[in-house]
Length: 342
Image (cartoon, rainbow, N blue to C red):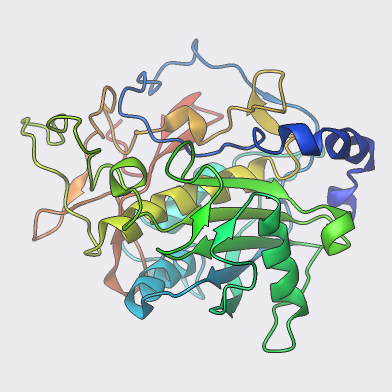
């Protein structure tokens, strides 16, 4: 992985721009109910490889729980993250599984032909004292990571070889642009702050602050009228959250989105559409609002329903069910998920 993270040809350029473009780069997840339906449409997208690294060594994921967290919410998210890998194939859960979904992400390669690797939850840190306060800028997110790896109390390792850091903020933490422009983002740390460059992502819990913006399709924006039909036969009822909390279930889809993009574009110089690394359109951005076959125009597509009528498209460990947006499949040249009907 050392060779994969040789970024010096790019680092000087990015550090020069960091003060001006950090608020723009990797605006990775902005929900929309008016997306064009890219499913099956290869002519609309020019996804290109820009010669940078992908995460091709087994990915060690380290989660930083920032703030005050409901233990049941943590358990749901932890089960989702553990669903990416397990000791046996039967542990992934029935098809389609979260691990099946990750196989689409693994189709992406670097210039040596190495594919994105497996991902496993490898450590957790609990920053319940709000080490950087209750308002976080994009830059201060890196200090959250610095605190987690240098804490005197149960710190997580600073793994610059194959580590990815996921900062999850609780209901009472405000983050720059959260609920206004983004629900999550990814980037990489600056050596001037952490000493090394490692990829990381952030996702916020939206259940209190903006469920209508970041927990779609389990919530709907206020004063926006009725939601669009979300079942094959029409209807205007909100889709039920499969794990009982719109904020957590919506957050899980954003987490999946960010993990897909930080793996395929960790230094913002690998896989994205267009020629502008300051505002890249990445492999999950191309499929916003697409969860099943036929999605588009606010319709999430054909998904499954549990016994309570809640929507899902993936199975996880411990009998969990999740609704996760699709990502762009580079071979099929369209949005794709393992619950696809074609």
